Image (tube, rainbow, N blue to C red; front, side, top):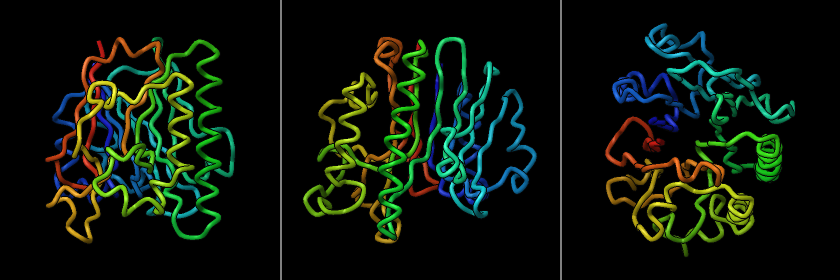
Length: 255
């Protein structure tokens, strides 16, 4: 089973660039995107209904052109769940969970946390609410896969210039500590599981400074699995050469 995740930074723009065609061409069992910046009615019919796939969309209820996530899956899930069940968080359309027999698959786009101080607190509160959400599912016996744009680089190896960014949102100690907490609860960062010391492996670059040309990036997009699924993960991949967004796609293969 192959699963691909990509923050497309605007699904409609991604489609126009032909990048969505690449996603479909990979023939993944599940593929998902974050930051769609679109309501379903704003998308072409061939994107809403990709042949051979069931599709699920969540979008911002606050304003158009903001946030949003989507999933396409060959196998129909037993049920779909949107958001955390907390209106303050769910109004931004950041999460879809699909319940399959063998695991719960969650596509999530965490808040960036920039701008007003209240937005950073919102991000931290969202982190905590999400961890409670997956812990509740796991304690009920569900195995967990969650992926998407987590909007934080975990360790110094996960960004090109850690010292220069040590006081920047996205690499603050309190954000990095949350990933430590996730890992302490038994969730595995699949990329680091296979590549514990690999450097220069990034998933996001600042387009304004042409950072991608120099590979001055951050690894802020992840696949995490609960430890009872670790043995099923056979490989991971970062598609650093696939264009169409300021992020690149990532994937995992499971047996």
